[in-house]
Amino acid sequence: MVEERVQVIGFSAAEPAAVWAIVGNFCGAWHPVIAEIRAERDERGALIRAFTAKGEETLYREQLTYRSDTDLVLAYTHLTGIAGVERYDARLQVFAGEASGSRIEWSAQLSASAERALAIAAGTRAIFEMGLAALDGLVGDARPNKPVASEDEAPALRTLFIDGNAQLALAVSPQKPGPLVLFLHGIGGGRDNWLAQLRAVAPTMRAAALDLRGYGESRLGASPSTVEAYCGDILRVADALGVQKLVLCGLSYGSWIATSFAMRYPEKLAGLVLSGGCTGLSEASVAEREAFRTAREAPLNAGKTPADFAPAVVDVLAGPNAGEAVRQALFASMAAIPTSTYRDALACFTTPPERFDFTRLTMPVLMMTGEHDRLASPAEIRGVASRIVEAAPRASVRFEVIADAGHVCNVERPEAYNRVLTEFLTEVAS
Image (cartoon, rainbow, N blue to C red):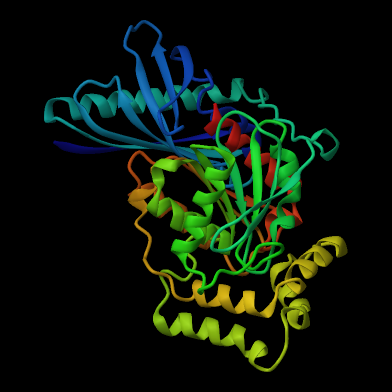
């Protein structure tokens, strides 16, 4: 097999957002050679475009592997249609021009037989050049945003208790067909942190927000909490609500728990949403984990409660422009945590049982973090998203930054968060 790389750079007088409104539509028929195109979903929910080219009968199929509206980038892989190709991965990204307008970079890395590689590379270059040349005439056909449900439209929520080793409490929306969206809060949170998301999701999908062990109205178990115990709790919720498939949506500690569940039960997930974290301390050294735990236990050992140091925690969690209502909500969540629960969660978080194997992430993954997140910076989460794309078989990953938000981005900027979340859920549930 012969490796070939093609890169074409184009320019547009239009601003990047206007260009992205065209090229970012993976299943849009904007390219001049496309005759017909349709969107498909594979068994995992990954987005596939199936299309024919003008003057041909061949059906081409390509799968979206990565997308970020924040970075104006998408990547895709060839599935069927190109004769003689073994591997074909492409990437398209829009940048701001040096003075004005936009620069568009479109590249492909392919592997094919010696007799076909050069021809495929030449054909690819021609296709890329034709597409970029056509852009200026297309700019302006922006995609409409999907509406986000208002609180007035959302169905009422009820509280459900599930008995067992640890009694669990969760807020649940009315029954809907399809997967259950289950929200998992952070180490300083509670299920009320997800009220805006429950109200946004409930009109179209069944949703629930869980109080983790010891938080809110849930009780600690008879033994210290572990990853296995949390995963067992998620299974209990699914069983109690009679659902076969889940979309787990976590924030920080909840993202680490959600990914831990995905390592063990990937077949049970229709999608995975990770906000403000993913790997937790699973890639930290023993010394780093111990330092993390010691620093956070110090005020507890001095006789203080989470309510006593909640103001300092809020200063770390909140973005620089967070309003007083947001700061009060974050304070209330932290102040409500019993000391025993906080110690229990810290012990679990700082003794991760594994380093994650991203090849296990066979479901579509959405990763979000706040622009001003001090604990899970955009650069860090963008890097993890790239590692998942590289490792996961036929990856389907989306990465977004929630503008002007801190660590608890779903609470601080719910409208922006919900817009991305509901778009992702519409895709995985279709």
